[in-house]
Structures are given as C-alpha cells and as structure tokens.
Length: 155
Length: 133
Image 1: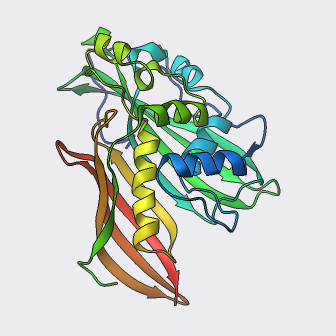
Image 2: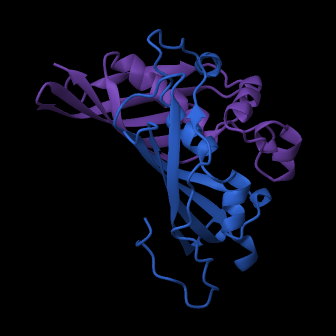
C-alpha cells in the first residue's frame, strides 16, 4: 500500500512517522464477561470452550497499543475531530484468542502516504502494523490497518 | 464444501444504536458519530448514528463461523467500503473460491462481503479458514 503512489510535488510532504513505535505498555486481557456481552451484541452466543470472538484481533490490538486513536492521529499531525476513516484491515492468526489470557501488543507505523482523492481533495493513507503475542513471545496474530485521514485543508 | 458454493448468510434485522454504545466501551472509543445522531447530521454524514467498522466486521466473522462451524480463521482481509447506520438491516455472505489440502488440514478460501440490502456492499474481502481432515 505504501508504494502505490508517487509523492505530489506541489503539496507539502506528510509528517515522517514511519517507524514510530506502537508497543503497548501493559498486557491486554479479554474478559469472559466482556466477550459474552460483545458476542450477544452481534447476535451470537459466546463459545463454551473459552475462545474469544475473533474480532478481538482488532479490539485487543487497538486498545492495547501504545497510543490512543487520538494520539495516533496527533502523531500524524491530524486532529481526530476531523474524522479518520477505516480503509482496510488484514489479520493473520497463528492461534485462536482466548479469554483470561494476558497478551502483549507490539507494533509500529508503517507509512503515511499523501495522495489526491476525487472525493476528499487530498488524503493521507496511514498504515500501521500491530502484533499480539503471549507473554513468552509466542506469536498469536499480526494485523495491519489502513486509515484514511482527510486533508481537506490541503485541497 | 466445493468451489462456487455459497456460504450460509448471517443477517442482522436492524443494527442497534444501543449496541453502538456497548461497542464504544469495547473499543475505548467515544466518537460521537456512533452515539449522537445530531453529531452525524452536523458533520453531513446522514441523520442516524453510524455503526463501528469493527462491529460490521464482527457480523462477517459470525457468518464465517456459522457457515464453516469447525473452521478456524487463518486470515481475513477486508475493505471498509461504506457505513452502516442505526436501524439498518445487514447481511453477511460469501462464496468458496478455492479448496486445498495441506497435510492434515483442508484450507478453504472465500470471497466475503457484508451488504446493506437497501444500498449495497459495506465490507468486501477475502478469508481463509482451515478445518481438520
């Protein structure tokens, strides 16, 4: 995704954020109670074997990473009030998620690419990678999210 | 399960605005576009609260788990194409595009989607699930 476009010469370059760490400070634990509520909110019953809903790939990494959404946007010189938009998510699981298990989150910003947009005028594509592992380092999953940061002020 | 088979759909009759309040807590994200229709209107995004993207993705995952009950998701990739609004019906589905055997596993690759029947696709993507032979 980061290599699909050529920089636009007459626009200011986006902030240089590639490589900024998103490592979480504390482990993330999926509580059985919250998993139950989440499953029920989506119209299914929770698993009886302690596995958590796979959507926790997104929640655990997003909540457990080392920045808030607002902080991540601020690192890109973007006000969260301007409305970041999710563009895509990709996840690869090495093992299922379970409730009650502490998980470690590590990650980094991969790229911030500025490009023209028919709809928004100018936008930045923010790509960041998050990995979730057991406390001993055993990989559990890897996920990459891409967000659109509208830069209407540059249009 | 064979190439070309349709995956059993998963339907939500009406996306609940109350559920969006729960998801704001799950995600630690109090963005008011998910909570207050007045904010949505002020931003020119419509007149109903907007469901969180990960909640839409959860419906799609429910479809996969229902359609292939013994399958474990190995990978999933989606594009967020459009919003889902409070009260709206959505349907997740998909099609098997490849089936292969790898050692003791059967690997099933699928095209997947979530649609708002009144408007069209809101999520599109691909998934790979594995089942034990």
